[in-house]
Image (cartoon, rainbow, N blue to C red; front, top):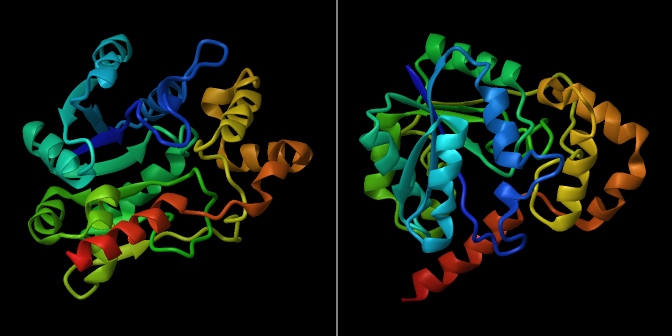
Length: 254
C-alpha cells in the first residue's frame, strides 16, 4: 500500500505562496494532485503542511481536492513526513513536492514496480545527484521503517529540511536505487522556485491537455520555445540543498 505525501506551505522564501498561485484556475498543487490521482497504487494522498496561520488555507484546499491533510513542524520537514506517515499508518511513502507539478505518472509506476520487486529501502529517479531526469520530475519512494530509522538518527539541519538525504550518507545501512533515463535530460528545468519558473508553468498550462502531458512532451515544448527558459542559464540545481549545508556548518560550531 502506498501513500503519497506532498509537502506544501505558503512561506517559500524565493516565491511565497507558489503552491497555490493560479493560472487558468489551476495551481501547481492542484495540477500535481489531479495528475497523480490516476495512479491506482496511490491509496491515499496527503498534503503535509505546517501549523502556521498562513497555512490554514490548505484545510480548504484539501477538502476541495478531496485529499487528506496533516499539519506538523515548519522547519523540520523530516519530522513532518514521519508524523504524517505515523498518523495515517503509511507503510510505503511516495514523496512529492508541490513545486514539481508535472511529475510523470509512468515514472512513479515504474519506481513502484522496482520498489516492490527488489525490497529496496529507497528508490528515486533524481537522487542521489547527478541524475539524468529533468529538475521538476522528482519522485522518491521509501518505506516507513526506513523513514523511522533516519528520523531517530538524523541531526543536521540539512537532514531535517530535505528529508531523504541521510539515505545517501549511510549507503551501507540502506538499500537504495536510482532510476536513470536512457538519455541525459538533466539540463531541463520545470520545477517552480522563482517567478520566472511560474511563468513557464503558465505557458505549459496553456496546453489544453496539460494534465496528461508526458515528460518528453514538456521537453519538446521547451525545445520549441527556448525564449521561455533563457533565465535558467545561471541557475544551479538544488539551490535549497546548498543553502542548507551552510546551516549545517553553523550547527557544527555550536
